[in-house]
Length: 363
Image (cartoon, rainbow, N blue to C red; front, side, top):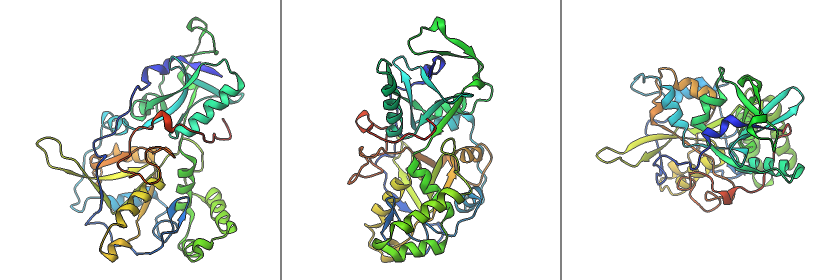
C-alpha cells in the first residue's frame, strides 16, 4: 500500500445537490403506454413484473434510451461541453480511502497492478478502510469525499496523466517515488446491489418475470438463486465489478424543478444510481394516484452504462440532456431509509450513514 500524493487537490469539503430536492415525480404525457400490473412484490426491494424484470427491452441499451427519450419534435440538441459534463456530475459524491492530508491510498491487488479505488457506496468504502486499519493500527487513514465531476476527466478518464508521486505510509514527501500517471489504475466501484439489479434487468425474460409474479410471496430460494445465477453469467453488460456504472431511469417519470427567480419551472428527467430508490420513488407516487389505470401502470425501466451515457451527451442528440438530472445514491439506513421520501432525501451522504458494508474480492 502506498499514498498517491497528487490527488488531494480534488478532495471535497462538502457536496451539494441541484435544487430539486422537493420535487415530486409525475407521469410524462408523451410517454409510451405500458402494460399494467397489480404486483407489488419485490426482489431486492424492487417490484416484480414484465415492465421491471423480464420486460421487452432491446439488447442495445443506447438505442433503447435514444428511442424512448428523443424529443417528439425531432429537434436535435447541441452536444454538452466537457465543462457542462463536469458540472452535471459535480454534485455526485464518491468516496476513497486517504491519509489525513487527503493523499489517496494505492493498493496492489496483485504484483503487477497498482490501483486506487473510488466507491459510490460509503459503506463499501468504510469496509475497505476498516480492512486496511485492521492490518496496521498505526495507519492514519480516513474516508474522503470527492466530486465525481472533478475526477471524471482529470483522473478516471485521463489518458495523458502527468507524473504522480507515491510514498510509503509514514514517509514524508521527500521520499516519494515519481511514476508516470498511467502506472496507477483508477477504479470506480458501483454499489453491488445496483450492479446485480442491472444484470437482472438485462437477462430476465418476460417468461422469467411471469414465473416470479406467479410465485409471489411463496417464491422459493431456488427460484431466486436461479435468477441471480442467470444475471451473473449471462448479462451482456456490467460484467465487471468496477468501472461499469449502471444508471437507471423510468421513461414515463418526470420531475418539476423549482423555478429560478424570474424563470419558469423546468420539467426534468431524473436518472438514478440506485435502482431501489428510483422504484421506491415511483411506487410512492403511484400509490397516491386516484386513477386505477394510472395507479397500476408498470414503469418502463432502462439501464445504461454511465460511460456510454456521457459519450452520448458529448454528441448532438435528439435527447435534451440539459433537462436530465442525475440523483446520487442514498446510503442504506441514512436519511433516505425506510419511511423517508427518496426524492427529498437525495443529497450527500452524512458521516453517520457510513456504516458497515462489503468490499470487492480483489481489494
